Image (cartoon, rainbow over the protein chains, first blue to last red):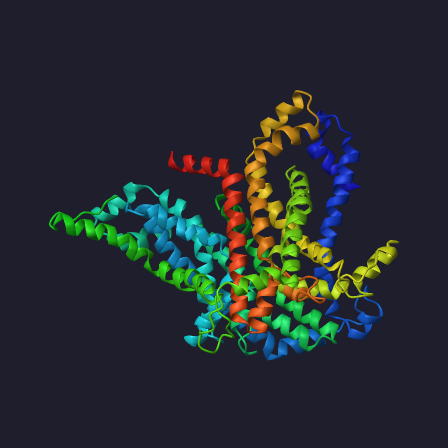
Length: 293
Length: 310
């Protein structure tokens, strides 16, 4: 009740002017939004709580609080190699992907933004069109290619194609940003004896940190959650990334619900932590990417 | 803009001027070419052969693979499942996201927290989403118990095992994961609409419904069209969530074009046949996207071009 009155006083002027039944409509609105929030939160909380229960208890009564609270599921997983290996592999693949995609796309976006040369718009279109290419369409030849160059079961075998498929969006976001940096700056740098690459590396990139953070975060989230390419390329269990680890752990321990829930919950933690810390940049990046793309 | 060196002959400086940008683009071109363009071209080549991926590529069959793919009922069903997801996304998920965005666009206490919650599933991977929901949806699981406790026991189904239900269950999971993304895009679009317009409409006696219909929705058009575009592309390419939740089962009842591709190409190593599926998937994506951009988003991109040039 207190929240509802607080809301009425805050937004009272607007709703009152609109002449609707303010209390009623705002109550209905709140009920709907709370219901949606509950549907979002419950599965996540259920997974975390389920990890503290025993499989027997979950089977007997799916909806109940842990009683007693068992930490052994979580501690077992934290003491096993699979979780930490998967976490490490996810980190390696993601860092490689982000570094590669941001570096090569920034170089290309610089050329496409600040040089005049014949065929520039055609080149841009060729890159931008990649946004429409489904990664699934390329997996069979990719598999053959990576097998022939010995990159199967290698983090680079995932990072390189992932970076390649990230290039279109990264260039599309970076180009207008690079273009907006004043020409005078580049002229001044060139008078001071700075080469084009020197300008790119020492002036443009440091000035573009917000845009680079945006594209970096987008690539990071994409790579962290990616499933298709790792599934295709990483076969051995010491190579698995977190999504693969979750998938395989689930199959291996399909009878032990509580353990599966604990593993899944732990695997969610890095992404959720990152989300809480970098929510602003992530959302800013997605909206700018979506609206420009 | 142009870098000139006064001593060098004109031709040489021009050559440098034109080659330098390509030097900057070279790494991107290499990575993009090698891992995106070449594989897609190769898929087109492989698709003309009957090939298991290991033997030499010598059993040329022309367009036979395409004929077989298109006549395969499993593929036809998979394509229909993609279409169903796209349709449901457009007519259920996007309106739902829009409705929530409209509500969240008002200032009220708790708005930031709700936004944080609604968007959270987007950062949780498809695999985790699929695994958790599978555990919630098994017969007698939490969803069933929850329904029973609120008197909805008659609604209980075999959510993931019933062939006629499984696609709708998957759609619910997809909505759980992605509506927040569309909502965030639309919120960003809504924030670009000046408040004064709504206030002016309210002063002129327009109801909330009229304001939304005649002012907000038209102004939000470009954003909605982007959202629709991303929904279509996502629906056509759908793989991760389906594979993690049902693997396309039971008995292909939830197969999509991409899971079918993975199944025939990788699991059963029919590379030639699978490549034909890949090319069809590629063509569907490209045709749908280009048509949509040309026909529907044309005005928006025209606007963007002129704005960029000014």
